Length: 431
Picture: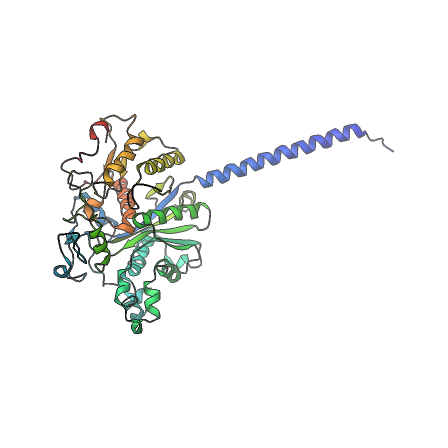
């Protein structure tokens, strides 16, 4: 029999165990790095669709309107409400609106229900915002060269910012309950705005409606990006829709004294005295960057990161918080691993209110004001000066504007800026 050296065997076993531990640690580290890389991966925009004031066809029409510096504000169409019955220049006048103009869409009744396999009877009860979402999402997928039939049972998510439904006043909330039928519910409850799109396309990914007021479409975009990074979906449709079909919310806003009497956002100007109400719908198609590259998709732009917060306690429920805005911007730059001086353009919220504009520029100044010269200024703009404040769809209008600007290598004009707002310290800011 061969004699076994127990001492040497123990050492070999110990060495073997150490190697396994080291290899396991290397594998764990590699997995963590891979997960971290996935978490920080960019999100590719591969498709866009939109209907905005002055550009009710597609992104190309939108760009042409922006490039020309078009003021798309028009008189409130008569089919919205009778101006003579509701207008009063005094914002304190009960039950009245103090504006006559805004950013409005045309041809809202041009929907083709047969195309989406919707009966004419059901189409009558369908909120026009739902109709817009179906049409614009389809056009965004065409832009992305994704045949809709290939999405059936796919992990494609839908994330829609929407908050107002004036159409429900005509039947669902008309005060005549005997008129209400099944279609009035599915056609007007906001949850169906995303669900109907998922249903018609046969999508199995998350389907959400988000209402965070003016940030709704950007919040929808943020959640869509997170869902892609968490692999809850492989493709995401994100955006927002907003229509003004009855005077009630405008009466509320008039009484709140936040609307510009001339119907125009004079963002950053001394004459800024409120915002203009606008309508529209914008939807973009998103993929993880690695998947878009692998599939050889046409990448229009890349979202480096997205961050979300809330103003918290400020001087009023509707008053912005400069410190919270500054904190958000710094966190976004940190996560994107980008320095403030590397940013050349900001598409601002820029509503044109006497209170909001100085607060927003104050936050931007705190982050971007240092290390930048007057010869290399930060350029700012707001599409609200062209089309008004689209509220739930405002953010996506700005996103699509920036993507188009990058594609064309040009920043379109910022309108209604004549005298800089004296409450903003322009002399100290290289903006």
